[in-house]
Amino acid sequence: MPEATNEGVALPVEERSLIQSPALLVAGFIGLGIFLRIYNFSKLDLTNDEYGTWWVIAGGGWGEVARRAVRIQGQSPFFYFGYPD
Image (cartoon, rainbow, N blue to C red; front, side):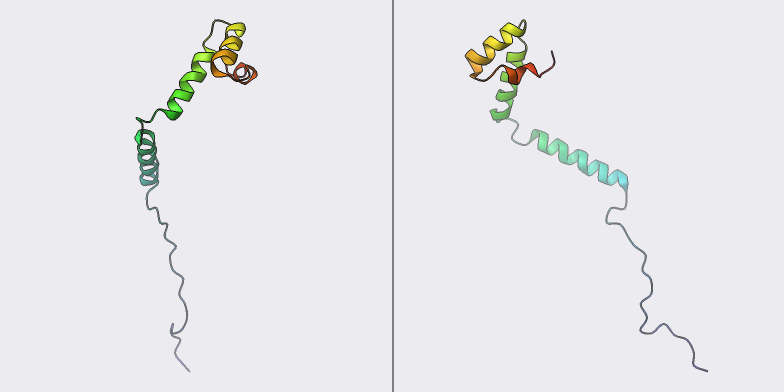
């Protein structure tokens, strides 16, 4: 009787994850977030835009928001009415 061998038969291989530790994955995402937050932080393009939006909605009331939106920003005040006070 022939002897059974494993020659030519693919044995199951344990599946291994590329990420061995979930903590390492979380630390990587946090590190990426910090890097993206401070990368070119001195550029003021987006920051100025956000500051301008805040200034318009920080007006004394709906009338002031509408006045600032039209006169200073040159945009429809309806865009700013959706922001919470």
